[in-house]
Amino acid sequence: MTYAELFVLVQNIKLNLGDQTTKGQKKLIKIYEKLKPYLDEYQAQIDEVRLEHASVDDKGNVIVDDKGNYKYSKEELKKFNKAFKELESKSFEYKVIEILNPQGLEPYWFLSGWVSGMEFEKPEEIEI
Image (tube, rainbow, N blue to C red; front, side):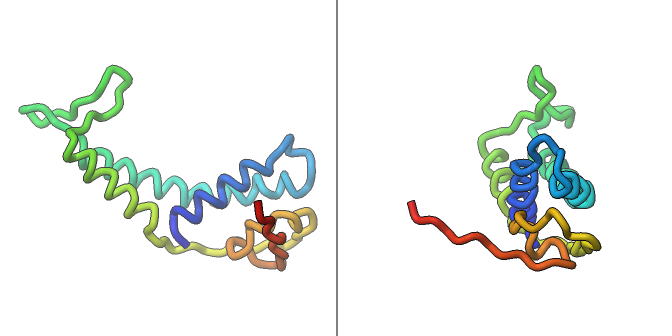
């Protein structure tokens, strides 16, 4: 799995949470919670890349704007963007989440490959 694929999954989960009243929606929350450590690891890596490319003054202090965000030179911003894209496409070790009671998760085909214990039918694609 790549971090980009993880983000697609998380977006799909968030789009399907609704008012969190169905069994399926409540189970999506639990799945999201199990994905959180992977998201946290990615965030930690992004934070490292941000700091690595941040501008510094002549004393080596990181330069920040009035909102506390790092500032970047034009060249370092290009390097940061490249590193960010590389990190997004980076594979990470993922342990598939085992689903013991899949009832209610049937419509959430986007979980395929991320969970075990059930089969999903991907919906037909519609041409626009």
